[in-house]
Image (cartoon, rainbow, N blue to C red; front, side, top):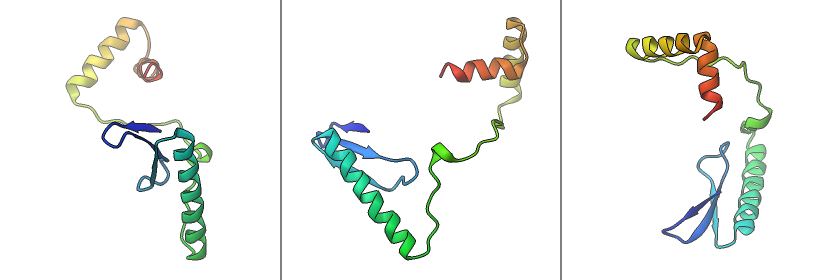
Length: 99
C-alpha cells in the first residue's frame, strides 16, 4: 500500500501480481478493490488452465543467496568481517538483518 501524491489516492498492490493495482481515496477500499480484482483474475486463470502464482508467504526458500560483487568490494567486506572477528557469511547476514 502506498500513497500517490499525483492522484491523491492510496494504491494497493501485491507482489505476486505486479501488473495489478487498485486506487481509491480510502485505504480500506483500495485493499478491498484489489482483493476483489485478484479474485477475478485468479478465477479467470483457473478457467483458462493458467498457472496461478504461489504466494511468497508459502514458497519454500533455501536460505542461500548468491551475490556477485567486485573483487574490491569482496576484499573490503572480508576485512570488515575480520575486524568484527566474525566470518564473512556471519558479517553479511548481520548486515542484511539490519536492513
